[in-house]
Image (cartoon, rainbow, N blue to C red; front, side, top):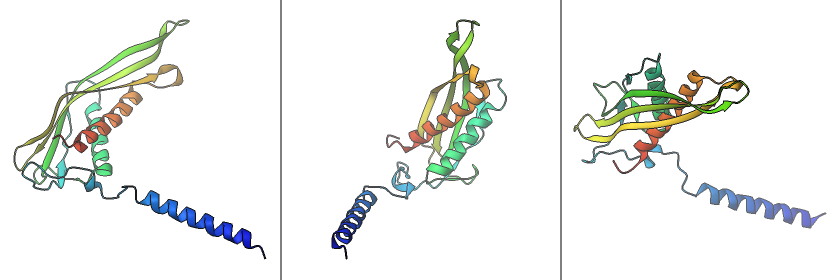
Length: 180
């Protein structure tokens, strides 16, 4: 009969339970409304948001659809707001793709061709409370740049998809900010 081994197992189990209790109580929550400001200036709760397809000044195929779809997915996944049609929604998030830029960062000196390229996505967006007319967030020029490497098979299409996803993430972060 090994009493030392059972005591050690008891202490290991006790310590691991204490660790789990400490980690579980560090402010983590599954309530997304606790992280987001969900009321306007008149303290009326915001529950729904409409996200119409962004406008576009660019002549690139479907870039406005990519940005809108990425934004809708991010809002559904990371905010307490539910997507709704504009005629019944509490708020609306509208935007426009202003410009898409491409620039060479580095060249292949042997072939004199671009090796690393940057794609910049510039959008304008506004989040408005439809019940009061209050503009919650207004960003007239919101810029995000990603880089991609052509020799490994990356192209502008994939870079713009990544830029759209990261742009949507940044927009949702702006919605999280308490300064609106």
